[in-house]
Image (cartoon, rainbow, N blue to C red):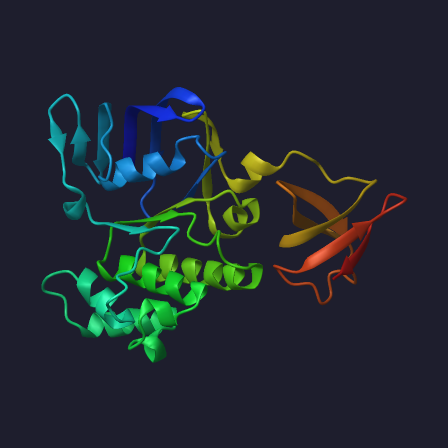
Length: 290
């Protein structure tokens, strides 16, 4: 269990604001911090990792105190067992892919573990390349692998896929989920992408102006509309579930997640991640795969 109960003043372009958060995160969870830019999400990640210090409060991980302002405890970042993946990759430009990973290897671990991780994330054939020889998606896989190599208790992801195109983002989302399950880490993701959160995360913490607005599953947080009977829109298919004789489609449209209905025949050929158009002039919608 991770327990974060902190206060930190923030000096933003919009003015002064207190980041004041009290949350608990279950071991092995894949949780998202969601909210507008400047809400305090990235600062919260940095405080958890030890890269920034809260003004007051405490952080406990698995019963171990990482930070306590009252008792002056502040465990150094390098001893917290945290892997951090930044949006800008933060790779060493003068090191090859493998050398970047070896640099992060914990003392006592064998180099074969680096080979194992490279195999998992699909980097084995690129191990001798330097960052400038890699695409954006490949660099992000290196950054992810480097964070995993140190065998972290917690993996922190600060909008790691936002600069990638939709196709590459979808592939790396699948890879993130695979790694989370394979290595059994607690994973915390900062993201503005509702579809990404819905696909990856079991829980969401919505942060607004430095405070928690709401917390729950993606469905609890983002569902604002019930199944509708009059609409026309294009969205990304997130989920298909059967409800007696009909199917419920969950779609990511703009900044919202909505539901609509479909028959068994209409879902034939539809897959998670497909873009679909939904049109209706009567009760039952027409669904077209794009």
